[in-house]
Length: 467
Image (cartoon, rainbow, N blue to C red; front, side, top):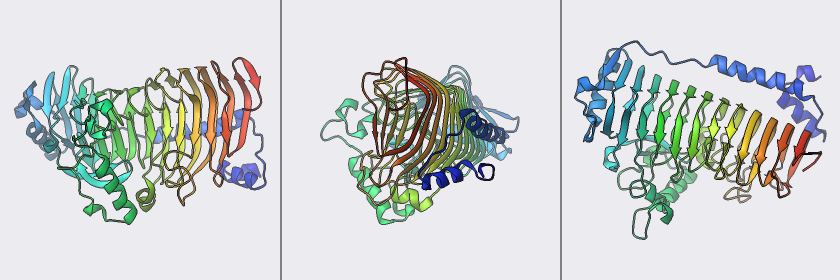
């Protein structure tokens, strides 16, 4: 019978019977990691014509003072009109406002090239975007594309958001980031946006931007296909760093993301189908990688999951979580594969983190992790939290089904697992195989969690059969 059911169908059947069968780990790994390989093989690089357009030819000045916004626009327009190609940013510091890429265009930063983004909100026109999982018209992300195909952002240069405390970060409303009473803050606009979404206000009427205080992302490609972001360094984003939305076939490779500002998530795929994140370094003020799919009513309105995502050979330093799913998760997440990553920082809260609640709803399922090494995390190695923010105060049922973790090695974590479902929404199907947890000083928290299986798990050097 097993041969004629996929894993999800089989677990659903056996769960209804009140049992979770023991299937050898080697059998499981062969099945689901074959799917990860298939996802990687299906992803392809964007097709960019072999033409070059040097920014210098359009009057650029790399002195850090001259504003090059129109120069970038002219070079990208010329490149697109010719049928596509590579826009070269040579050595220098190029002050600019928003940059918008179009189909068949690659923006390439040579070594020692720096994009120095303006801190003037007026340099960012309104575009369709998502803010914390809700659609709106807001300040353009610093680098943006909409409904484009075959686009790339590459090179060894630096993308500097310049979001120091007094610029963008203070809008978060926290004194930690320079806000003081009487200064602008996001709170009122954020609440207004969320109220609009819950009331079903049309997206076209959700107009923010100039005169409002919702910070833009650094790089956002919206409804795009065949995307490559490679080798660049991103520093001090106003908000989230890399944010592909409703896009397909996305690769993020060899990227470094730094910045400890508010909501400085490293890479947030949102309602993305088919993505590879590899050989990247994240040192952030929030989650390193956070997979999302829309918030509350707006996420359910679109109902598009993030799925078929492979994360491998990445390093995570500071952050609220190494690999995170949620909390804007109403459209669901499935088929995520994480392998051969290294995480280590006293300011990294968790290695694996899952955030949901009864306002979000959404199904998280089929998450596979293997061969991850963790030096130090601040709290638990793994947390599955259905009490995040609003907790049980909602009408929608969060679900987390089938989390498989193989060969997770942790040198220091206060506790192994913090897994807390809701009374009417238990977490189901966590399986830890060949895992070692050291430096553990507190017992795991396991509430409203069913079908937790330990297979060759050791805590502080001693084999354990339960947590």
